[in-house]
Image 1 (cartoon, rainbow, N blue to C red):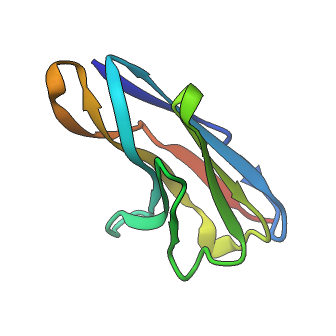
Image 2: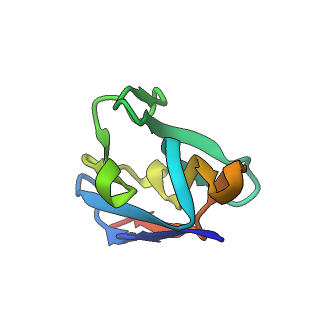
Amino acid sequence: QVQLVESGGGLVQPGGSLRLSCAASGSIISIYVMGWYRQTPGNQRELVATITSSFTTNYADSAKGRFTISRDNAKNTVYLQMNSLKPEDTAVYYCNAVLVAALGSRLNAWGQGTLVTVSS
């Protein structure tokens, strides 16, 4: 079993900052890519940012210049530092990991989601 547990969501005023964390645990052999996605009611889940095991990053245009993704491979943890938050960043943020688990099975794992609300 593999589990992703997110933390760090909450309510923040426009222009403020939040830092999301996601820790992966379980029978993990290696994690290729970790990332953050977000979803609002009635819309599809969309990419925010991803980071590979060699720290190559990819950002959605909406996140460039404001958000920074990072990871700690030793802790199987990914972070998302979000600055200059806007009301349109309000969403449920989901952690994702593409990994190899015990017995060599490749998994695309998701966290349960954490709500970020940007409002005055």
